[in-house]
Image 1 (cartoon, rainbow over the protein chains, first blue to last red):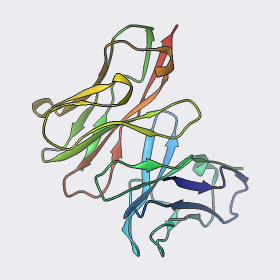
Image 2 (image 1 turned 60 degrees about the vertical axis):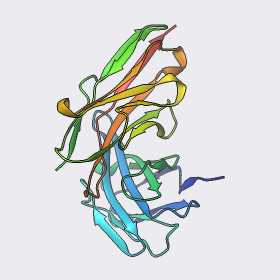
Image 3 (image 1 turned 60 degrees about the horizontal axis):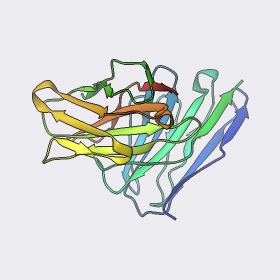
Image 4 (image 1 turned 120 degrees about the vertical axis):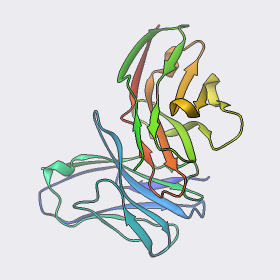
Length: 112
Length: 113
């Protein structure tokens, strides 16, 4: 089954404790992206990747890092999480830039 | 830079009413346009998309959208909504040659039985 998976689905952590949210897709898609969803603000793009080893900042990249060492995986790293990063995070992939995106189930992160 | 505006933040309709949700974007060149739906507690799913050709596009579940280039609009419509259409709807744009995808702030639709 074609899908985008994210782990963990729920995470409660404390300020400053490094964490990684994993994202994996099994569709051999080139383009992958991370979004955060906040009430009243919709989805905002954090980082995207056009292909392996090619990543770039989206609209809200501060406080986040990503890597794309393999085509299928695109982890989101929070080196020192802060409470303003409490949000619902979605990973998405598409065959190419500009095509429809397939979204993962979301990760609800709470930073205390 | 591209941007997307969804002016209706919260819409409440009775079943069988007609629906039109507004979406306007700001970019003068070629665009790919999308409508996604997010049912309560679920991830986003594609409703429909426009890349080129016929400006009236049909999607799943009876939804359609019309691309009007002169108005920079891509409004979503459905002739008769059902309770199961209760969800949040997002318009998104990817401008030609631009790598980012920009989403609108979303419209929450509540359909009353």
